[in-house]
Length: 325
Image 1 (cartoon, rainbow, N blue to C red):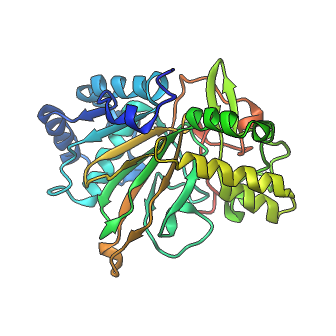
Image 2 (cartoon, rainbow, N blue to C red):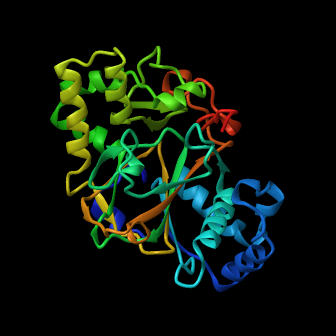
């Protein structure tokens, strides 16, 4: 079985996707941060982010993301003594060693705040459990700033293992999933250039240069239905089946991220979601993750039929920002 088609037990038994920052790496980051505290995150340049001390770690992470399990966990960012601003800058710098950071919405935001602020229409601004999905970018990162009072574990599943399970148990559904669905973005993102509804269907399970390439964003599929892209009862059943199979205990691995830990996922190979959780009342005490989107310039480009954004930003990914802010 390829390394990107794993079970939960296989992932537990494999430590190759887990990386610890060394004392020297942390020291190098601290030195760089001390010189950047007056520089806004949005103003950080490629030269600001270049840090040779991190390159061996970054190379190993890139290998795991593309050729290994499709995920990586980086530990030991000192969240207990660094400010949130320092954590954010260090996170961006780490990400810049791995790929190219891109905007996540029409606002041109470099980092998304995954926190329950009651804003519907996006997965990362509401609380509670999240269905299994991927993000429409090569790699997504999550940095834990603050844990929930209880629960809120990250759920991850190898999308290839999901396909194999569906093909084995529900073979008649595979043609529907390989045909795929229409997608749309939020209204503000559409104003920045994304189409109202994709003119093509995006297959849930496909391949790029002989490597699996999955695409599954149920929220955007339902939004497309509201814009006129009808879903049959069979379509809806197929979507629900993917979510159910992806959460089977033998396939789904739960990660309880601790403050200062970063999870990176290859969105072509991994579906992710979240368990339900009990949150704090005050905003400053709520469960808080920082989300980073990375494009990988050296990876094969997704074909047009697997792209839901018609006007991506730099590196061929992300959501273009509006010029008016």
